[in-house]
Structure formats: C-alpha cells, structure tokens
Length: 254
Image 1 (cartoon, one colour):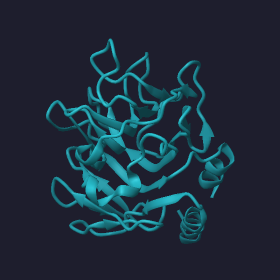
Image 2 (cartoon, helix red, strand yellow):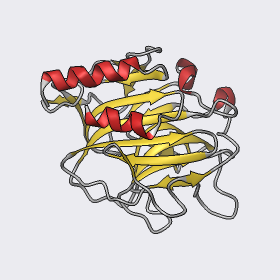
Image 3 (cartoon, helix red, strand yellow):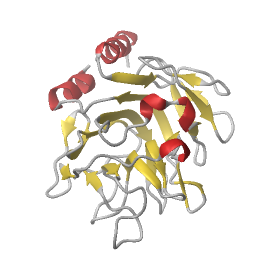
C-alpha cells in the first residue's frame, strides 16, 4: 500500500466522531501499542514480543502475531471500550491477513469476551463454526454473559456468508446498534439469511468491575487463553456507534 493511501485512510478514521481507539501497529516488538483517537489505551503483549512485518495498511508495518500471542488491556484501564446496557452501540473494524494454518478453534480478533468466567459482552471473531458456518466474519454479542440458555456455548452471533480467505489483506467489520448485529467483509455488508443481520435486542451484558478485559487475538475460554488469531494485524479501530454501510464502504475504498 502506498504511503499516501495509508495516510488517507488514517485521516478518514480520525475524522469519525464516534472513534474511540485506533491502533495502527507501527511499533516494534516489545513496545506498548498506544491507540490514537479519543482514548489513549495501551495494548500489552501477553506472550512475548510481537514483531512487525514490512507489510502494512495504516503505515509501512503491521503486527506479526504468531499463534499463541495476543494483546490485552485491563478492564479498569479502558472504560471507553466497556459497551453494555444502554451504551451498547459499537463498531469493531480490523485489517487482517490470516495465516495459512488449520485450527479446530475459532479465532478471536478483538472484544470484551471472557467465556471462562461467563463474562461475555462483545467480540469480533472469525470462523466460529456454529450454525453451519466456517471462515466467515462473526460478531458475537451477549446480554447474559454466560452460555445461551439451552446450549453449552454462546450461540448469539451475526455471521456473514463469505469465507475470509487466507494470505491476503481483508477488512472485517462487526457493528451492533442494540437491536441488530451486522458483519461486513471488504467494505460490503455480507448478508446471510437469519444470521446477518442478526436480531438481538436488549443490549450487552454488564460485567461490572470484575468483567472481561479487552483482548486482541485471543479470548479466555476453558480457564485459559485460546481461540488465537495468527497472521498480520494491520489496524484495529473501535467506534462507539454502529457505522453505516456507506461509512464502512468509504473506509475500505480509501
């Protein structure tokens, strides 16, 4: 990507009135990744230094996330990312290049989602493998924190229809407006009967002071970190409202 295109995309992101955080992952491994935008929150490396690759989207570099690596921000340090109850409107947008790796688990991209302690709120996923899906963009939402009543796991999610291919840059987006969750792939709404848009009224779970941390490239499940994303992470943006179709297309088109 040209430096001018990267700058144009950064400029458009920073002009959004709903932008909470934008991470461009230009830092060297071993450094805290501090967001731009309304809130300056530091993503911490949780499994050793995350190196950078000369293959960026918002600049010349991207984070090269090896399988098993992830980032985290303690809940107490990121109140602006704690979407719940009446404050449930959000958008999570990420530029990812998936690694060629076969894994039986889904891949978490970003959110406040702790399955081990039944503290689920929201999370952008890939490849949930529920409701006859595989490799699609998924927007998990929960108003209860624990598993969906009658099921072993949480089953409430928007799920797109198009598989997200590996080895190429993909722009993946999940929005929620307190009524519908929606998933987008490469700037376009990726509709799927019954699951995208996904009707989910009632807002998001309030985990209180002991709720989930904000994690990137992993969530806590079965008592330990898992659901690892591996590959390149070129950018991550969080907004405090559901962006429109036109706004999402404009971010991709840039």
